[in-house]
Amino acid sequence: MKNFLFCLVFAILFISCKTEQLVLTPTYNKGGYTLEEYKSKALAAQGEFYVGGRIIEAHTKQPMPGVAVKLGCYFSGDDYGNYNFKTTPGTELNQLISRYVGYLDVESKPMKFQAGDSLIIDFYMAQDEKPLINCEGAFN
Image (cartoon, rainbow, N blue to C red; front, top):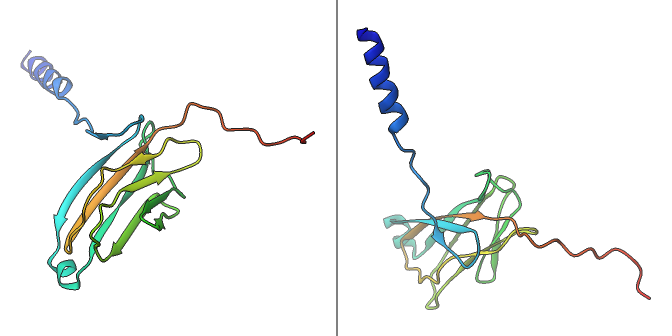
């Protein structure tokens, strides 16, 4: 009987524990992003900042290889769903944009970077429900 009660209490505690839910910064579409900010003395000494992270499919939570993330005139992305930028800060506001064919764009809020900033921004992209345009066929 003691074993049964122990198992019952353990099962109730185990089942009642909530899983941690991911909180995304919302965007104008179904996607979103997470943002972690750090300060780096090494980057500050070099007069640079770093922005990097992952691009993730919002529904499956899997990395998305080949996605381009844009910062100003620069693009970054690799075959594993990662991106990174390391550069000197300017005076303007910067916005990161994640783009992929068949998915809705995800844009970060405009940010001003300072030397020593180190940001990890993970983009969560949702599929676009609109069909892609079929460009096959002949023009008359």
